[in-house]
Structure formats: structure tokens, C-alpha cells
Image (cartoon, rainbow, N blue to C red; front, side, top):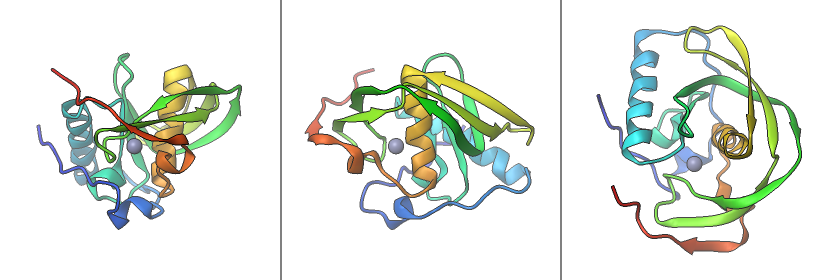
Length: 156
Ligand code: ZN
């Protein structure tokens, strides 16, 4: 188990476009496991590789139903709309209201580099969109309606 340092807003690595993953290797497997550990440690529902300083198209999500690993993910369908609070481990202590699709289909590779399609609604749709945005160098703060506000740190 290894917790990696989470890069915070203002770090230029968070505004860069990530590169596609072309093959799975031990280094990338370790990265994915470390990303999961780092996400759980931070009590987040998702984490993207640039948040730990790696410009690869990899993200992890867990909204409480178990971990999902995304490699080269791409939104192929979206519909509906949801407006709600969103936060980010790279923007500690803050949250803001963001409108996202209520339902998305995402084409992705699994950790075994097999193509699959994941469907998500509500929180999962929000988390998928948020993480895929990170891979394109986009932060949710630019989508916030009405400004960011402070949140109490999570207690555990
Ligand atoms: Zn984020």
C-alpha cells in the first residue's frame, strides 16, 4: 500500500492533457493500486493520474460499490442533467455546484486492457465525467455555478 502525494490546484500538471496508455506493465499496475489507496485515504470517490503527477489516461472511481479502473476512457453517450455539489481531492476544503449529465456511457479499457462499456447514473455519472475531465486537464472549478464555498474536513 502506497499513498501518493496529491497535486493541488495551481500545479501545472493538473492542466495538461494526458497520454493514452498503450500497454499494461508492472509500473502501471502499481500506479493503479497506489491511486486506489490514495483515493480511499483521501475519502474521495475518484482520482485521476494527473492528480498524482502522472500524465496518463488512467482514473479510478468508487462511489461505494467497489473500485472501477478506467484506462483511456471516453464518454460515448450522455443524457439528462443533474445539478449538485462537487468537490475534488486537488481542491481541498472546497466544494461547488456543477451541472453534469445524469446518465453517461463510457467506453474504457479494463486493467487487463480489454475494452468494456460502463454506464453510470447520478453520482457515478458525475464521478466519471469529473475524472475524465481531469485527463483533459480540466478542473471542476471552471464549471462551478455561483462560486466555490468552504466545506468542513471529513471526519473519520
Ligand atoms: Zn478531481
